[in-house]
Image (cartoon, rainbow, N blue to C red; front, side):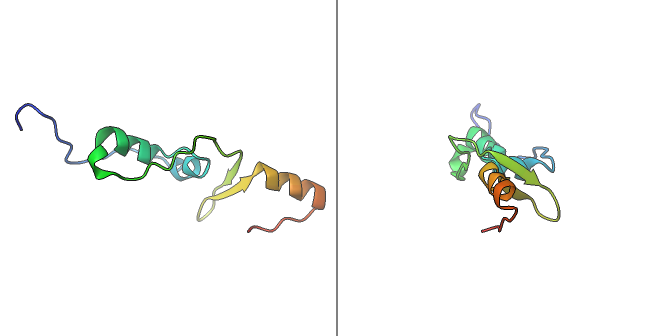
Length: 81
């Protein structure tokens, strides 16, 4: 209207790794909505300091922090909090 573009659908193509990247601190969905439809005011959960760890994919993604890997190596036991 009046020469202004208006987003009426955001149909981006995300992969199965989108949630894994979010667990590691990179919220690409939040970033995209901030850029294209900031009026939605959806929180961007991207962290300033990225998480160091590994994501294991199964029925749901799980994050294993590097510090917990060290606990497992030294104690031979690790319990998920």
